[in-house]
Amino acid sequence: MSILPIFALVCDGAGNAQIENDSLSVSISLQGAELQSIRSKITNSEYLWQGDTEYWDRRALVMFPVNVAFRDWKFTHKGLTYEMPFLGLVESGSFEKVADSRPNSVVLEFRNTAETIERFPFPFRFRIRYSLEGSTLNQEFWVENKGKERMYFALGGHPGFRTPLEGGKGRGDYDIVFSEKMTVDRLVVADNLHQNKSLPYLKNEDRISLNDPRVPNAGMFLKSAKSRKIGVGFMGQEPYLTLDLGDFPNVNMWTPEGMPFVCIEPMLGHHDQIDAPYEISEKECVISLGVGETGRYRFSMTVNDGVPGP
Image 1: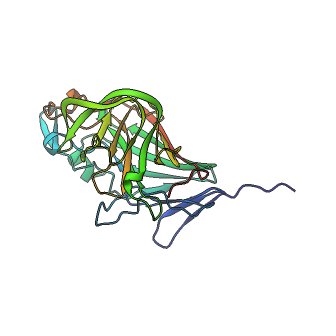
Image 2: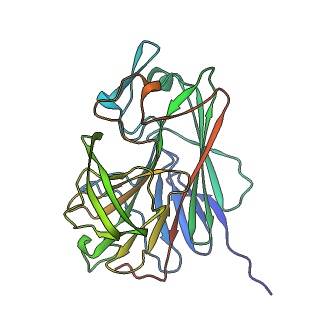
Image 3: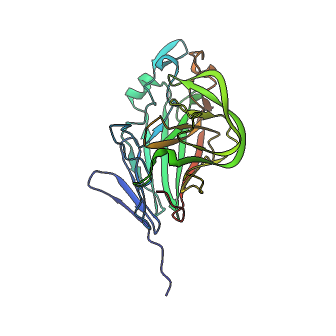
């Protein structure tokens, strides 16, 4: 007799959506559609940073319609000025569950409101699907332009991962691991903006220690990243968790000195520049959709339980 895989979608007492299969159990908050947990059902290890307020109180926020920040926290459009909150409009918004035929997934939706229009004058519908395939968690986004003019926006994920994964080691025992060797400079980020300069980063390397002096507090941004898969691994070993950038061309990696986590942030668009124009249609850091168009974008995270973390 064959044994069918286990799939489930439930809500816990905190109102979080939960999905699981034979490999993983995943929890997602309806507030901001933010991941709360990625736990292995094989080892019981928790991979997602758990939001310790002593360090960083978030876990895996979603950034839309800005990646981190616009210059001076504002932009203009058609002669009007709009204030854009740090990290965007949806990271603390209330999402609703949408019917989904897949038993191992959940779809969450956020629509523009009168309040969002005051800050972002483009009607939109924003959906996220979280789904499980074996030991892989897929994160798919739909951005629909519901307005009567071209819409300009950026989109990004901001998941944090625990380092150390378990007790007994320090963050210096962990590496960021790239899927191929690269010789590449990183664009400098300071005060949440690109500084229009770069610094040497990797030289024919495919990994870097979290305690390497080349790792800055403000983040390591790679534009059009050649390595499409970036993971976290114990020193010298294969990664125990890998993020596939998928449809997101850019990536920022953030792991401030002394912090027990590393964020791998897929970005469609990027941080604003320090001298960027205020008019949103002229900004390099955004992309656009025509009237009635829907953009669909995806990245994924895969857990490798066969690789030791601690």
